[in-house]
Image (cartoon, rainbow, N blue to C red; front, side, top):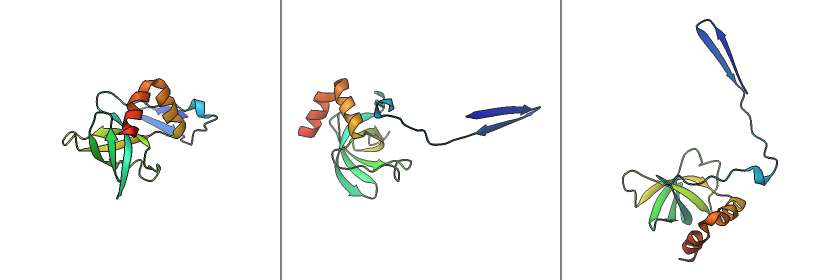
Amino acid sequence: MILRQSFGFLIVELVYLGKRKVVSESEIKLRMPDEAFEVLGIAERLLGNDRIMVRCLDGFTRLCRIKGKMKRRTWIRVNDIVIVSPWDFQSDKRGDITYRYQRNQADALRNRGYEKALSSLLGA
């Protein structure tokens, strides 16, 4: 809830933040990778120090780091499906993990047409 009041030249804005309540898993939106600068991948190996080897859909295996926002909130395991944002330099070798799909979201992703691509990554 955002309340905004104006006192002449001064605008006061109060923001009430809180946790959103998810009633069912069907309400969770499925985040799709932005085709311009993000790619899907599967976590291959945990290297420690927030670094993971990820095999991406574009054919590269990247050394990726978990972004600071996700470090303490999300635990990534081997064979998890993630969204990778390649770096501007060394884009074929390094990247940042920006999102991890949960199990039910991964199933929905397979239903949306990524079945062949994901099975080729898991089978390779």
